[in-house]
Length: 171
Image 1 (tube, rainbow, N blue to C red):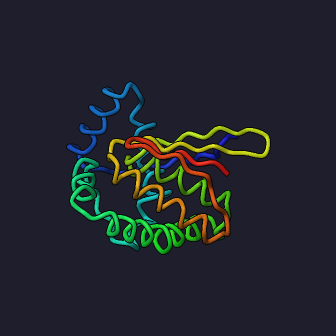
Image 2: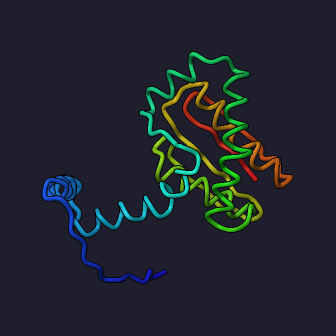
């Protein structure tokens, strides 16, 4: 699929431009590619998440918060994140809360929040999705409940396999 592009001119602070050049060089990409990635991040995720006053927290800090919380508190937080925030995000981004759009929301979250890696495997009549992460047991508990409550809203019940570093589910 080819994405249509436009040509635009912007003025940016010199120091910011130098930072972009350094990061692009380190990632072995062009400044144009890096700037486009930043625009996509804003367009696909950050601008929508502003509605929820999202804070950018290092994964290690989030894992520490989870570890210090009871399982019940982790589950309650995951349900809040799934039932209200994720649903609103999916609807704002796609217009409807459907299975396909929920999966797109998972892919988008994996791309932009850096809390987990997303992979999927399609087989006839079945999809298997894996989230791998470094958030520990309570991170898996959070992600499992976050996923489960979203699917419950569309009357789907995935089959879960969970360990301390991954959440795998089948539909």
